[in-house]
Image (cartoon, rainbow, N blue to C red; front, top):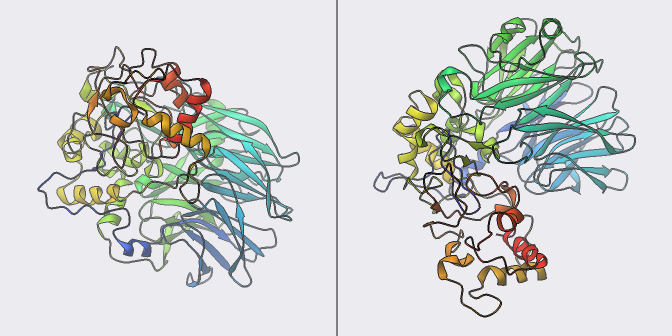
Length: 627
C-alpha cells in the first residue's frame, strides 16, 4: 500500500496495500509501537564481513541491536556484542583489529575491539548513519547519513568528524573503489526536482586524497539506489536500483513493470552509465539490493529481497551484450536472457551478500527468517543454511513484516509494499492511481510511521479505514492479483501500526525549544493578525493541526487544489516528523516547507502567512521541524 498525504493534505493511499487501520468490530488488537517486547528477540541480519584471516564472520543484526560473531568454519554463533539502536553498516580496519558499526537511530558509530569483542569507543555522525567504509590506511572513516543527506568524514586518530560532504537525498550506502582512491555513495530517495518530473538520482563520488566530492554520476529515471560493488580491477562498477514508472497511470501493471528492477553499470568497462533490467517478460525480481562480484570477475550476484531469491549473472556475457546493443535498454524485459544464468531461491527477504575470500561460496543474509544461506558459486546451489538463533515463532508483527516485504501478492511478483515505502518509510514520488481516473488526483507518497489515530485516509479522506482501502480494491487496481487473506491482512495491520517515528533530530535532548522554535510556536498558535484582527478559526494553524499528532482529522479547502483534482478539499495530515518527508502538499508540488507559503499560499487560505517576515517564516518552519 501506499499512503500519500501532503503537508496539509493526506494523499491517496498509493499503490501497495499495507493495511493500517482496523475496522471497528473486527476484534483485531492494534499494538502500540512497543507493545510486544518479544519483538526484540528477532535478529534481522544485515551487513556481513569476514575477518582478514577468514576465521570469523561478523553479522550486524538490526532488530536485536547486536553484532554476531560466527565461526566461519562451523557457522556457530560464538559471541553476541551489544551495540547502539538499529545498527546497519559495518567496516573493518585493514588489520582487522577494529570493527566499526553504524547505529542509525543513535547517530553514532560503535568501535569494537575484535580481540576483546567489546565496544571501546563511540563516534558521533550526522542524522541516521547507514553505510560506512574505512580507507586502506585505516586512518579515515566515511559514514553516509540518510536523513541529513551527507557523508561524515571522521579522523580516526582524533576520533572526531572533520567535515561533512554534501551528498544526494537519502545518502545510504558507501563502497570503496578497488584502489581505495574513491568512495562511492548511493541514495535511496530521488532528487526533489519538481512535481511530475522524471525521477533522478545520482552516485556521489568522493576523492579520498582531498576528501572532497569529485563527481556526481547522474542516474536518469531512477529512484532508489542501493548497494554497489566493483570488479577487482576496478574497471566495472555495478549498483542495484529501481526505475519507477510513476508518470503514467497505474493501469499498466499487467502490461509491463511498475518498477524496473535493474542494474546501473559504470566505469571504463562500459564507458558512461548503462542501465539493464534483471526482470523477465513475465516474471519480476523485486527490490534488488546488494551486489557481490567474484574475485575472478566471472560472475556477479544480486539479492532480490521481495522475491526471496538471488540472481546470478555471467559478467563476460553481460559486457558482450552491453557492447553490441543501444545503451538505453533499461526497459527491455527480453534483455536479461542474455546475461542472467540462474535464479537461486533462498530465505525470506534476502538482502546483504558476502563472498568467501576465495570466492567459492556466497553468504546470503535472510533478513526476515534470521538465517544465512550458503551458496556454492560453482553450481549456484544452496549447500547449507546457518541458523543465527533468532526467535523461532512468528508473532503477528513479524508475520506482517514478512507480508510487507513480499512481492508474491502482486501480478507476476512485480512489487511489494516496500517498493514504495522503502525500509518502511516512503519514496518521495508522486503517482497517478487508476481508481481516481486517468490523469486525476495525482498524489504524493508519504511516510507510514506512527499512523494510529490519523484516519481517514486517502488525500481526499475517501476511506474511513485501511481495510476499506486495501481489500478488493487493492487486488483490482493495484496488485492485479488476489492479495491478502484475512489473517495476512490482520498481521499487516499489526506491523504497520507498530511502526514508530524515527528520532527527531531537531528537538533538544530535554524537549525544550530554542528561541527560534519558541517564536515559531507562538506563530503556529496565534489567533490574530499582527494588527489584532481575529483569524478565522478554520484558518488557524493550530485548529486544523491539533491533537497529539497535529491533525483534527477533518477535510478542508486550503487553496492548494489543482485542475487535475476531483475535489478541492483535502484531509488534514498529521505533522509528526514532517521535516523528513519533502516534497509537500497532496501532489508533491511544494519542494520545501518554504514553498508551501511563499508560492502556494498567495491568498492566505492555508494559514495566515503573508504578514510574516522572512525571519518569522523561518521561525515557524524551525518549530514545525520539532513536531
